[in-house]
Image (cartoon, rainbow, N blue to C red; front, side, top):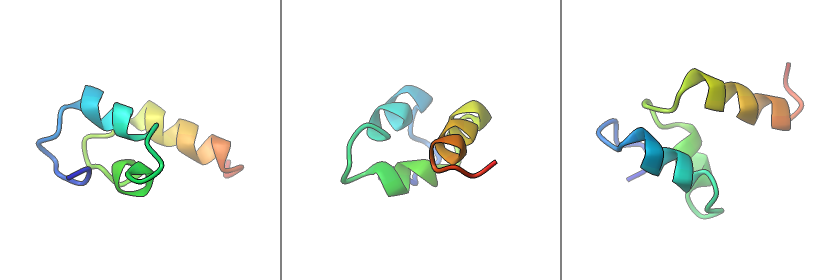
Length: 46
């Protein structure tokens, strides 16, 4: 579900807070660039 491009951005961002859906949500095509940058920064990837 989290990888579905039709998922509203707000719900997708909410799924980032749920451990069981974090990975799939991080791959969501609708994930905003700023959220992707935050994920990379938290992982220590410049």
